[in-house]
Amino acid sequence: MMLYRTNGEAFARDFAAAMVKMRAISPLAGTRGEIRLNCRRMN
Image 1 (cartoon, helix red, strand yellow):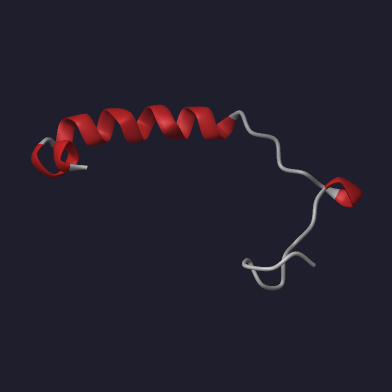
Image 2 (image 1 turned 90 degrees about the horizontal axis):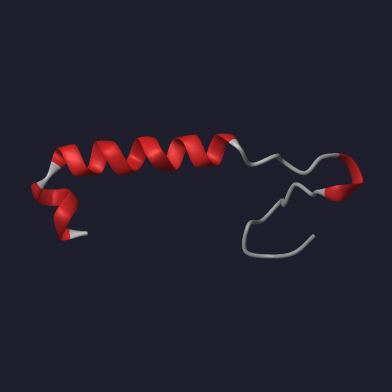
């Protein structure tokens, strides 16, 4: 976004908030998830 190009403080603030949100995501494991050999295709 243009805002981030011109305002490093806004980028740092929004990036930090996104990292906090991502920390709350639980990865799927075992039979509930999959590791794709090719990210563009389903296994």
